[in-house]
Structures are given as structure tokens and as C-alpha cells.
Image (cartoon, rainbow, N blue to C red; front, side, top):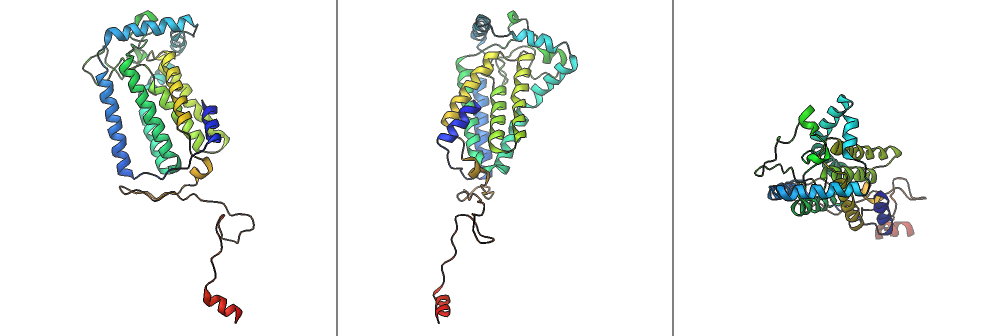
Length: 295
């Protein structure tokens, strides 16, 4: 997926967009997230279909010989401190990390911000469509899997002990896993927007997230594979901006009024006068200067 994104950038890089006004952006993201939560609420209550889909997913994974989620959980539960840490990671890192990532991109990498915002919006929208069309009981609720709810056993738990059709927390919105999807977006965004070989360590976040959602019994492998496929398609359509230009964007922070076009910085060209900038020309002489020079 990272290679696809890099290939798309090399074929047709886009110009960085200016940083949007802060208040407008906060209102936009708040409205979009509220719409997503209401959509999850509307998809709640389809218990029978959710369990039928769980049976189909479980049987398909076994038919194609995917590793059992129950095996991953069994390994992790041999080490209680590890499973407790994974429970905490699942419950506390997902949403705060995404908010912190969005804020960092907005303030520190404004040239990449609009691109990453639309990637998240389209991925979340695609996830909501599947929540509505494919309700899915997670492994911890589908007893055939043999998995338990480790959050309920060891804590902390983010869901009620039994699914509630009137709750805002839709426990049957397991397909696809936005925990996995958003974690991959964070890794991709930080790898593209930063420099240095250590930036590849951001891949640890989606790796730990996949381990967490499977070991805790909240998701199947297919939930992560489907969201990764969606993200790959979105990255092929929404090409990242030209990296060098986007990193150099210096858009002033505004609260409501649109900012002027971005002004990428540039390194001095070879042979340029000290203090000059690449791509700039010396000022034209004034008529009075010419007269003094020729006189």
C-alpha cells in the first residue's frame, strides 16, 4: 500500500493546498464525526444478520487457512501484563492518537493537512457504508470462535456486557476495523510528511493495533484486510502533494478567513547573490539610477 502511494505520487504529484481556517476546520471535523456516530447508531440492532455475517467471515477465514484469532489470543493471555497493556492500548490510544495526528499535521505540516484530512474522511465514510450494509458480530460475541472479551476479563472495558440496540456504541460495527484503518493512515501520513530513516518506525502503530484488535476479540483478520484495501484505493485516487513543496509551505494561521495561497520556501540557487532566493531576479534599475550611472 505504501508502494502504491509512492508510485502514485511519482506519476502525478499534486500541489500542496493552503492551511484551512482553524474554526471552519474544527466545525467541519465536528460535523463529520457527529454524522459518523449517528450513522453507527442507525446501523445498530441488526442482531440476526450480524451473527450470520460472523459465521460467513469465520468460515471463510478457515477455508482459506488464515491463522486463528483464537490462537493469537491464547498466546497473549499467557502473559497477563501483556494482555492488560493491549487492552489499555485498544481502549485509550485509538481516538486520542488520531486527534493528535490531525492537530500535528494542521500546525506542523500544513502542506499535507488537506490531503490527509480527505483520506480520513473518505476512509471513514467507506467504513460507515459497510457498517450499514454488513453488520458483524465481533469474535468476542460469536461464541463459535472460542474467543473471550479480554477487556471484560482484565479491564478496562469500553463496551457494555451485552449489546444494546438503543446504545450509541454499536458493537456490531466490526466490519471494517477503523482502529486498523486510522492507524495505517497515521503511519502513512507521518512517513510521507517527515524525513529521516527513523520515520519508518511509525509502522509499529498499525502493527500493534492489529495485534490489539485481534487478541482482544474485537475484530477478525478480514476486518483489517478490508479497511487496508479501501485505504489503498483511496491513496491511489487522492495523491499526496509534492513532498518537498508541501514540507516548505508556510501558510499563516487564520481562524475564519481563508489563508492566501501557500508560499513554499526554496533553497538559494547556485551562483545566487548572498541573501537571495532561488527563482528570484534582481530588481530592475530605476531611471534615476541609470541616469547617474551614464552621466
